[in-house]
Length: 315
Image (cartoon, rainbow, N blue to C red):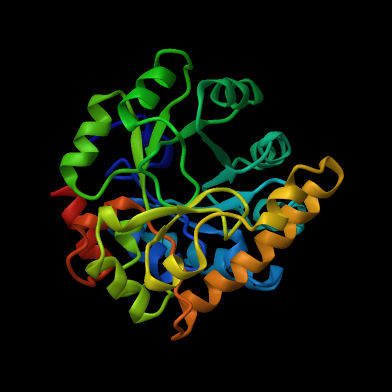
């Protein structure tokens, strides 16, 4: 399974274990590297810069057996920690950074200066061409089957649209739950895939057993879009609690979001409230279950060690 992605990251299989808020941790990434794929963690999973720095050092120490690891940075104004997180990543070093929800220009410039590759989340050709022009090493094509913040185009359409019009590698994100799905994405022209939801129900994932079991019990038809977490449409499991609170922003939020001066602050407040709710649901036993996941949980039939999930994806 040699592709441009395996060459870029020196990995056996063209798979990135996608960064997932609250879910991803060093234990998962270590197992990912041992299994021949790359692992990635959201920098926002660490409350302090010292915690982030310690995680990098732990993963670097584990790399004696090879493997690649990276971190995801939210690069828009909603993440007030962004610049300091970028500084720590560049000081300590990692193999790659994935940027989301904003301009990656500063990240690309600083990361490249210290030899770190930068992959950028994109949902359309316009932004893909922009990040290519800024020097991105690859574009992560977030399609309409992705978990969390997803795109609007189906995988085949998006991959082919990008590969026909940009020269950097395209990594497909969304809609992968088994090896056949990976083969399909590669046949469309992708250099690799970013896989998240199947790893939620891993033994190593840093969330509650209830969250993991939900990924076993629910399927693709149970995934809905909600505006109640980050202010940007996000996919979640349609639990009774989600049904109760609804998936649309409130009337007041809708009105305030139309005010140019207040829009940024309203979104930041919604982001904070939503992330706190998701954190409680993912890390504590609570009836307020707001569990982020994508439709590829359809293939999740039991809670397994990360290494076994990798085998299901590659064999």
